[in-house]
Amino acid sequence: MTEVPVPAPTPTGIDAVDRVLDLVAGLAERPLEEHASVLEEAHGELRRTLDNPPAAPAVP
Image (cartoon, rainbow, N blue to C red; front, side, top):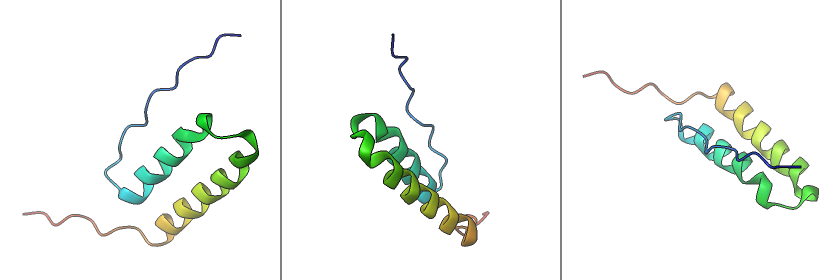
């Protein structure tokens, strides 16, 4: 079986979301036993971000 490379995630500009994308992108290097806890952590962080969205940047 041939592995297909996964491209790096495109930054969103929202720090919390970008950290989650980086965390999930690193799953391939982690042992399978850690995947569930990483995904749970990612889900929790995304939920917190949705519940408390960052302030929109000020428009000049």
